Image (cartoon, rainbow, N blue to C red; front, side, top):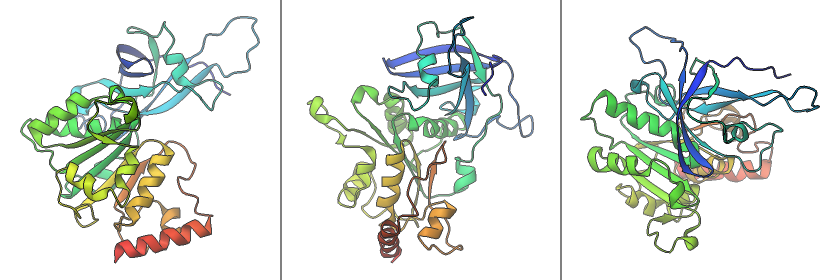
Amino acid sequence: MAKLLDYNATLVERIDIEPALSIFKVKCDEIVRKGAPEDPWFIPGQYLTIGLNREVVEGQQDPRPVSVRRPMSIASAPEEGEIVEFYIRYVSHPESDLPLTHLMWQPSFQAGSRMFCRPVATGKFTLRDTIGDDDPRIKLFVAAGTGLAPFISMARSRILRDPKARLDDMAILHGASYSMSLGYREELERLGREHGLRYVPTISRPKEEPDWDGASGRVEALMEPERLEDTERRLGLEPGTLRPEKATVLICGLQGTIANTIIHMLDRGFVPDNRKLRRGLQVDESRPSTLFWEQYDSTPVIDTKDEELMASLRARLQAGLG
């Protein structure tokens, strides 16, 4: 049973991108470092758990829990200091009785408000824990909506460590419903001009924006076999570059985005980093993983018990591996 949280952090700033999409900057009263004092206190790609208590009215019967906590990817870089940034969308149709975003979107939750933030960053969705910090291959970051957050952290961190650094090995595909929902777009375009970041935004409702001349469709659609070469060109890559010997793939976003991206990239020979899925695909243990994703729940992104589906995916992967 949930208990009231002891608040240990302050909302420093709130930036509303649109009514249901905001950036929240939070400062913990203290942070916990896992490494040496001179090491960054978190690694880009990690997350923190944040939470709020709901209003409890004495004498009122309310079956909901009194508090809620959720893991949120950090969008800021560790070099920015102890104020951390979260990129969050309001959940219109929540699955729980007490969705965190409904509390965060209360009019009273503004700069200066107190909240809970677990002061220990965690998570393995980092370059260090997936492919290694020094891997020279193209890193294709596939982000749906607020799934962009960990990739912002990774790109920012490299530039803050070395203002002259290049980002040519980072490629971001970011999808949203409308162009106004493409958070961090100006920053990413600037990183493209000044540091070589490869960035392609796409919107899924282009008919409602006749002036939009960029890519269209859900972000995972950009990896469909018939569109992948065009996506490579949009990223400034030679057709055929997105193969395991030259690239790796990291995905963050909705379940559908993760599943469909995995399926599409099997055709190019990308191997998922998930033991159960690897077994279902009959991947040899010695073959390195080249496709990774961030997931905060335990629901499988692909049903490995569906033998007809798995047989089809095995065939596609074997064809992709040549």
